[in-house]
Image 1 (cartoon, rainbow, N blue to C red):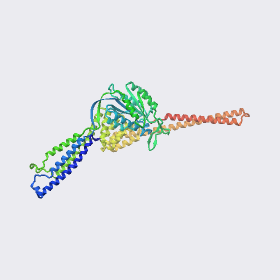
Image 2: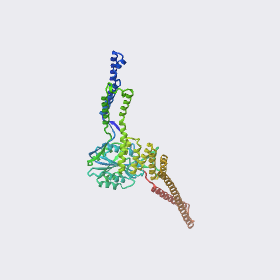
Image 3: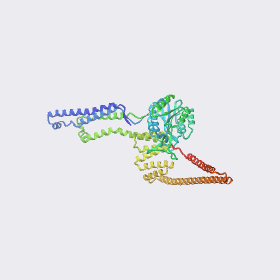
Image 4: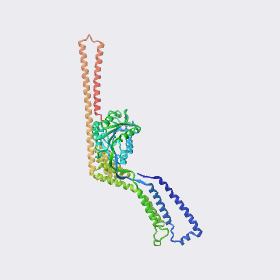
Amino acid sequence: MFRFEDPIYLYSLVLIPLLALVRFALLRQQKKRLRRFGDIELLRQLMPDVSRVRPSVKFWMLQLALALLIVVIARPQFGTKISNEKRTGIETIIAMDVSNSMLAEDVTPSRLDRAKMMVENLVDHFTDDKIGLIVFAGDAFIQLPITSDYVSAKMFLSSISPSMIATQGTDVAAAIRLATHSFTKQEGVGRAIIVITDGEDHEGGALEAAEEAKSQGMLVYVLGVGSTKGAPIPIGDGDYLKDNTGQTVMTGLNEEMCRQIAQAGGGAYIHVENNSRAQDLLDAELGKLTKKEISSTIYSEYDEQFQYVGLLAYLLLLLELCILEIKNPLLRNVSLFKRKGTAVLLLLIIGCCFMPSDLSAQNARQLVRQGNKHFRAGNYADAEVAYRKSVEKDARNAQAAYNLGNALLAQRKDSAAVVQFEAAAKLEENPIRKAMAYHNIGVICQGKQMYSEAIEAYKESLRNNPDSDETRYNLELCKRQQKQQQNQQQQDKSKQDKNQKNQQQQQDKQNDQSQQKNQDKQNKEAQQQPRQMSRENAEQLLNAAIQEEKSTQERMKKAQQQAGRRRLQKNW
């Protein structure tokens, strides 16, 4: 990103065209005075050492130098500045729920977006504190290791989505346990775990995890997002998520669970609504924590770059001093300041003006090299940070996107890695590296048993690199696994149909036996008391048989529904 620290000084650039107009007026007056003495061409022949081009070149070099000095005063800034500082603050780990239920829109714009807005505001309020990010659904992983780099925190925050974790559900306990191991080893500093969720804990164990965190000196705060009334989960095209019985899923905030987790963790529960009340309450709670001096690596989003512009202005002024307004007899044959030479000089000056634009790309390459160093050392989280910074500076850098995918894959962030490999494949022009990106996509999809997607990725890889034996082997293996999966699904379906048929036959048999038993009973009673049977008694016996049959069918229906519920898997 690029900016000026003091852009008000840029208004001084209006002096440049004003000075050019003044010089133009002075040149006209000079020509008028020369005409009083005689013909101008004749006068120039009488003054062969006087140059017509040099004064103009010197003037425009001074103009350009003046413009650059004004830019220096405005303090141009871009790139990232890294420094180590001692600060007094706390350590905070944000554990954000990214399950599908967080897409519900009972708060504006959605539960997940509202949570991200709160965290971004929290980062803006931090000055001397450290922050880390954890995302969780049916599983949990570290999105950003604890750091004082607020720029990276915002960048990682913006990329959070439910697609990052393939295993759906809500495992709050896993997130809290992971957070307890994500703080620094420094003693005496206040530590807070902020769980942002809708409280639908599908896995259990959250209370025990919160109590364990409290015993280690970490307070657990819970931000409950959503309404208790419940809301559907949009999946696009105006449709909503349904369970495997075909019913629309209604997800509601479980405030009781959130309160219990916060109480067990020694923190507080805060309900997030469409206002700033939750933000104020959270800031007040964090303000109570003990602050201690901590060593922080500070990444500034804007680094001073005025020195490069100042150096260019200095060179222009130095060159202007070296140029004489009259021709040097020793350099008569040098054509630097003839028309063609002037054009070359102007091109050189303009080229120097655009030198800073290459610094950003160079900085992006340096970040890639820095990430490679971390990756080789096994520091995959630090490598991810460096690669993301490189992508932020140069979105067209295919190598940075590919390396970022590898760093994510090393941390088992498979879904996020696929996104980066796809981006690298689109940007990459080298067919070999493009094939490597598609190959990695295939490996991830094959590991997730997404065989159709894996086969397409392997085929695309072979289109770019037909000589890859490894990709060809994986493709054949994937086809075989897909066929086995289809056969297994067919067998499961046949077995299920057979079980349903057996259940139906058993139910029919039970119904027939029940009807036969009732009929035998009625016949026996009719034989014993033929004279005492009345029409009313016959109707009562018939109604009893019908009622018993209905009861049997109801019991069978309830049993089937309970079996269906046991097969229901939550994916929100």
